[in-house]
Image (cartoon, rainbow, N blue to C red; front, side):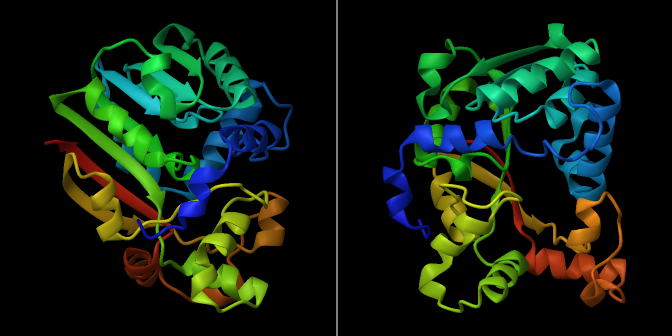
Length: 279
């Protein structure tokens, strides 16, 4: 693996504490947390800024089928799988995130379609009895676990030959990396892991953030046949305006066409999107 192996020694409790203190996308709306208006706005903002997610997840495809989600956060994708008619089991490390996700499911009347289990996915067999799923889905999660290979090793046991894995991990070489290096004024490529971990999320100081190349993600998924690997997502919005829930392109992106941006994302996107099936 390209990423710094020192992450493997970081206690999972540090990761849990980080996400309990700052659940992902918690501030995607200024409305009162837990209200329908809040959750509606969180979803609009997430899919507006990351429009590739619905296509990658392909929610409608899993109607009437079983989905295992590794890391549900506050439940944006979880809700959409359930809305589409899937039966979802979600594993979530952060009890704070899980609490909000459960509130969200209650608000939309979908709680009967989703079972959220709080725990460390590196110990998946201790959390979830043997069973199989049609889709195993994890978007932006396992790269924050000290030993992501342990999670992957467990997944095969919850899949049949007909099951599919859809996984997003962060790309090692991306526009985001170069933006971080410029921001910090550090151009030492040997410090990629340190720099990315510190700046990978909206809230600084994430304890663990692995990044992957096409080659290393295929090595991680050695027990799978990889169907496709692609890149997506460059954040092009003016950050200060974005924090105020305003959407204006940053000056450097103002004259970049959608076609040009799409081409750049294919080369320098932050999200490495992987589809795979068991060998």
